[in-house]
Image (cartoon, rainbow, N blue to C red; front, side, top):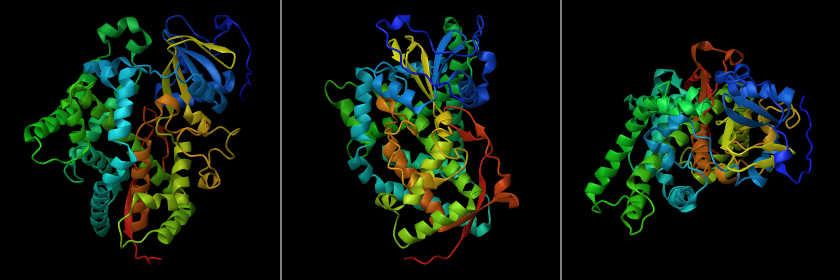
Length: 485
């Protein structure tokens, strides 16, 4: 049960106390009460004792954990500027990635320039419209692959095909090329590298808890991350070099061409290394989270066959298999949108938002000191019975009459964050997730592999920067003849 905390006025914020929290011991802080593999759940359990804002000492790092919409709004709206920086794990600093990263740069002139670049050259409505045909081609490739396996009765790893499709959708948007195929094994190599990057950034590292040890890299995290970063950066650098050598003879008019034009312009504020590290962010953050969302949605629908029936009925009423699925169709698929939102409520792709205070602030009468790590536990808020009726049940209907979207307006549901640090790729992610799900569910019925029943599916979560199923979703596609309205 949450302890209600009311605001107290104070002329001097330094007289305010830190939020309450579990006992802290010398050197180790509160580490013994945290489970690194289930950190979101451990923090949720502690919040029931210490309240919706609490202090957890992790080694020498003061961490303030927020678990309620009201306090989240204060943090990410009222104090947005003071909390608009990130806590940067030591491993992420390999190859100085944090100095040229849209994700980890502090709120600065360079970070704002990166955001503007993404908004105008990658995620603008004009750019997304112009790249729609490329995404449609990737959906056709996906359906051809699923159809081939359907005819042979083969089991499909949903997360893997989602990853390959998203990987090629993004690589075509940026470079006008495929980086993988469903049968080559290259996709799995990319997935392994990206998975290693995200796991390395989220796993416990003693150098993060005791910054004095950072120069020593005692667990080798930064050395491993350097190898993973270099693998992807070398791929991107080869693509850029090839485009530069080719010159303007075959203009692709894609994102890479736009970036190269910017680099060639006088007084450009971006370097080639900036561009490569931005690509690294887009691939590591964008592909894994999108693929994980698709896998979770498919898992929830196979666990809830009645919801799957409803969504398939809606798809048959709205779509026609004689034409290609378009982005504009998404607005007509109300139940599909509700299903995606409900999945993000239960399984937020980023279960914990990570911020850092660059100034001391007062949140609900408690002091958040400068340089504190500030965590917003989305997973807790998504399962809070004071916010949601029957919070542990999969009920997409709750979003049918809910006017709120996923853009941070409702602080009880902010799967992509809010404020300055809201995910810049939300518009593209929304299109890719909905069109891919609509394609898979409209053209095929699905059943679990090995005769498994819905009630037997393992829905255990694997904590990380991205929340994954601990066991991959394996399913068999079934072709059905349909009438088109």
